[in-house]
Image (cartoon, rainbow, N blue to C red; front, side, top):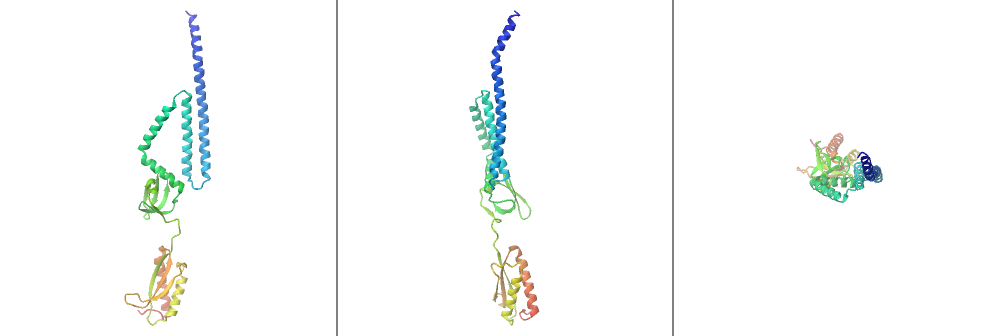
Length: 271
């Protein structure tokens, strides 16, 4: 009886040996596949980021995003290969993963829409950080652009977060792309009825030309008129400047012309 037990153990061991060897080979193959898969995934991410770095339109965040997609895509294929190594049918698993992904995609439809819009904004760059824009009826300066939202800061220093889907799907006005057109303004200066017109207009013309904030293109004009409510004689100065300097230029011109005409007395309007 005792002699039969060792024989039975030997027979059972001989029967289990192929299974143990096969399992060991499967485990070793799975380990090799995992090592190679992780190496390829890392290389794929590095190579894709380097390739995208040659294109200046791609943002650093976008490079990292696509690099991560490549990395996890290779890891997913590696996982399927490991499962196949153990004889697990991956067809049904792929179907389950696809159905799960579809369910998650439907549940996160709004988020994925913002993600897709963020990717498009980062690729095509209709605006950059610091640009003055108007989007979705909000006027402000771009503070941050992420994959999911755009942050604006309004004139009164209020933070506004806009989902990227609303930014990409709306008409966008970017005030920082082209230089602003010069702002045209005018100021009317009354003069005395008895004033010598030519010297007065030449004096005013020289004052306007010497004012630093007055733009040279288009050139300023100095014209006589009687457009006031009292039909009094006056000089209308039309000039171009930045819109922020309009009040300052008008004040400077009135002061300089007043001082010049008061000094000469000939063109000063009666008090």
